[in-house]
Image (cartoon, rainbow, N blue to C red):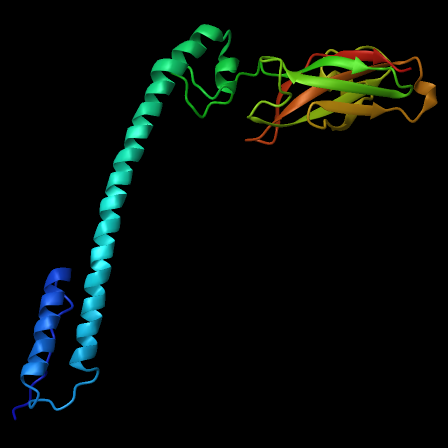
Amino acid sequence: MENIEVVAKVSELTESDFIKDVKKKSNAQTEYPDIVEELSPSAATVSGKIEDMETKISERDSLLLEAKTKTSEINAIRKEVTGYMTKKWAPQIQEAVTSKSQVSLLGFYVKGDNPSDPPSPEVAPLVTKIETNVPGRHTLHFVDSVLLKKALPPSILRIDVYGQTGGTQPADLPQLIANGGGYLGEADKAKYVNTFANSTNKGKTEFYIAVYISKKTKKPFSYSIVYSAVIC
């Protein structure tokens, strides 16, 4: 026999042509068993693999059809909800809000603004009450200055609290620090408790400034006004 190289030429075939070609090759082994006495794996084994492949193709096609249907349903729901957001909620929110900050806190945007822009600095920590009924302790309660509800808007990581004991009321945080004040701690959600260990502070005024720390930059975002209470 002349020197030849036998090739199968199945790699480049489409899925359906691959099945047809392999079936043809398997049937040929059955029709002409004397050419090659025993192929390994056998024609029966290969035929079984092709049957399994056809079953899985059928299952896959059913899943693809179902996926196509589900995708259409998902897109229909998204279109419906988009209508709620743009044609229902946005106009109602526009009628209700009084500032850009409120729009931002509700997760919406002002037309023309970049969605990545941070909320307006007018959002700042607001102290609603300083409890002084326990001797040697002040308890500060916070809300945000826009909605007057939650202490932390979505874009804010935490509230840092600074204090100055006695002296002249500072105009801002740099002056508070220049007057000898400093960082007291981080508010626990909507509350901060400041305990005075030194009884000689009794009767003095404690001045407070609260600072919103941005989630994005981890830096100060906005500052409260100066609050004060007498140490009992």
